[in-house]
Image (cartoon, rainbow over all chains, first blue to last red; front, side, top):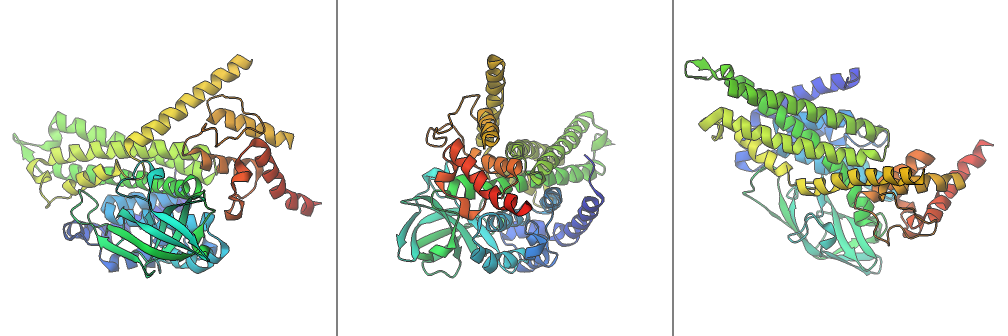
Length: 385
Length: 85
């Protein structure tokens, strides 16, 4: 698929940004389990945190492929930083799509310019793949809802300024904008995760947290079906492209390493079994990118098929990135197991991608269902004829 | 209105395995659909009928049946039709 001149220009810009500001520090951030605030500021200063916010609201207003290319390049450098773009964009897009005019006025420009960082608070200890099982409760009290519950593994929960919190109420699941300084909201850092260690993960405790009704996003009962769904669709798209970046980073590391390291008197790249792994990397990255581009074009067209095509792109890109990262460690041998080389970080981060924003298994169910429905429809039409 | 209903029937048929849905049949309550369907339906309505489904449209009654969605489409397209004449 051919990129437009604008998309090509932006891809070059993103690549230069990542090479200058992300790649040099990514391994250290991972070891320290910390994302330096100045890096987030640089993202904001370049307008990248406003990627999905319309220009009229102070954002960058990227089209879907441009947004994807940004995710790819950030994913090539540091999946933790890419995960900031993911969750922040999920919140910004939700605000833009479903927020009331008051909420948009209050938050959209700040989100678009990175003056406020958003985080997505859906997951709980006992509610992951099946979000309907969340137990965080929202009870109406006058002009407020009172939220009580416990959210877990919230990306950038340590530093976000506002959270999109999901809870169950008597009128169904709801989504709320909850500011960090809301009394009753306490965040606790989560450390020592397998991957994306610099993603400032936190647990959220909401203890009788009083949130005004005007902070409700969408109507009660639509919290999961529309609000969480549209945000997670954005998240899957972002993660899919981020996985293209992980694959590309692995490929580039392997090409460099295999061109320097000798075994049995010849460079690794001369060994046919190494060539096979590199071939699979090249093909896997290209195929993932094409699926992501296809999903992006459908998204910009507002096509309902964009949702399942995003799921397919996410599934393929994540499983491919995990395979590529495994082979990248293999090519690097003992060096690949050392934090002196980035491939061990890519390997750990790639595994996370197979779990977040809908695990591989959840994608498999959705994709298979979609395929079966298409066949059933065709059979139904044929029977009618 | 009938044209909108026909498009809706066709879309629903494609997403619930070819099953024929009555115009007053409760789509969500019957458990025909998966978690992605609600947003696919929103995109379908927006793309095919040139409307924007927004926060204020999120009421269960607007999406429950083919008839309800046809009425939503009619309401949301009515002002622009009036303005164009």
